[in-house]
Image (cartoon, rainbow, N blue to C red):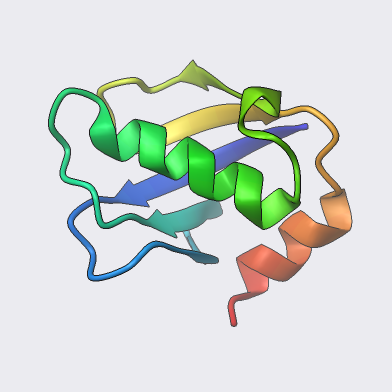
Length: 86
């Protein structure tokens, strides 16, 4: 399943929930330096979907705040719940 993600680096804590222009918002504590925020966002996605980190791959957006990730084994119902927010 492909998921469009909006990453917000430098947050106080890592949280996956809510939406921004139809994309899932992932707030990460890591800064946007040397791909640290991207790696943290993909790990947070894996945790949110209950899959292993290796089952989440970046498709596009390595240097952009808006990214597309492929989640192998992701549940569409879980995505709907995450987009709705806490």
